[in-house]
Amino acid sequence: MGNAVVRNLIRRRLRDLMTQQASALPTGFYLIRSGNGTDNLSYDELRTHLDAALHRAGLR
Image (cartoon, rainbow, N blue to C red; front, top):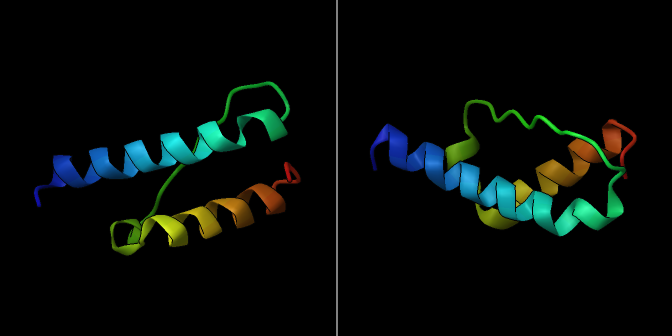
Protein backbone atom coordinates (compact mmCIF):
# COMPACT_ATOMS: atom_id res chain seq x y z
CA MET A 1 0.00 0.00 0.00
CA GLY A 2 1.11 3.56 -0.66
CA ASN A 3 1.78 6.12 2.03
CA ALA A 4 -1.47 8.04 1.48
CA VAL A 5 -3.50 4.84 1.59
CA VAL A 6 -1.92 3.85 4.89
CA ARG A 7 -2.40 7.33 6.41
CA ASN A 8 -6.04 7.36 5.40
CA LEU A 9 -6.62 3.88 6.82
CA ILE A 10 -5.14 4.94 10.16
CA ARG A 11 -7.15 8.19 10.09
CA ARG A 12 -10.41 6.31 9.45
CA ARG A 13 -9.68 3.81 12.21
CA LEU A 14 -8.82 6.51 14.75
CA ARG A 15 -11.88 8.55 13.78
CA ASP A 16 -14.09 5.51 14.30
CA LEU A 17 -12.51 4.68 17.65
CA MET A 18 -12.85 8.27 18.88
CA THR A 19 -16.49 8.35 17.76
CA GLN A 20 -17.11 5.27 19.90
CA GLN A 21 -15.48 7.05 22.88
CA ALA A 22 -17.20 10.42 22.37
CA SER A 23 -19.99 9.98 24.92
CA ALA A 24 -17.49 9.03 27.65
CA LEU A 25 -15.15 11.97 27.02
CA PRO A 26 -15.52 15.55 28.20
CA THR A 27 -16.53 18.02 25.51
CA GLY A 28 -13.58 19.51 23.68
CA PHE A 29 -11.17 19.12 20.84
CA TYR A 30 -8.76 16.22 20.73
CA LEU A 31 -5.60 15.93 18.73
CA ILE A 32 -4.54 12.32 18.26
CA ARG A 33 -1.05 11.63 16.97
CA SER A 34 0.10 8.31 15.64
CA GLY A 35 3.73 7.36 15.54
CA ASN A 36 5.95 4.99 13.66
CA GLY A 37 4.62 1.45 13.64
CA THR A 38 0.97 2.44 13.83
CA ASP A 39 0.45 0.97 10.38
CA ASN A 40 1.42 -2.44 11.77
CA LEU A 41 -1.30 -2.43 14.45
CA SER A 42 -4.58 -4.25 14.01
CA TYR A 43 -7.80 -2.39 14.75
CA ASP A 44 -8.02 -4.03 18.19
CA GLU A 45 -4.39 -3.22 18.98
CA LEU A 46 -4.97 0.39 17.96
CA ARG A 47 -8.02 0.50 20.26
CA THR A 48 -5.89 -0.81 23.15
CA HIS A 49 -3.22 1.84 22.55
CA LEU A 50 -5.83 4.59 22.28
CA ASP A 51 -7.54 3.46 25.50
CA ALA A 52 -4.18 3.49 27.29
CA ALA A 53 -3.36 6.98 25.99
CA LEU A 54 -6.76 8.32 27.09
CA HIS A 55 -6.25 6.74 30.51
CA ARG A 56 -2.76 8.31 30.88
CA ALA A 57 -4.28 11.68 29.92
CA GLY A 58 -6.88 11.28 32.65
CA LEU A 59 -9.74 11.15 30.17
CA ARG A 60 -10.90 7.62 31.02
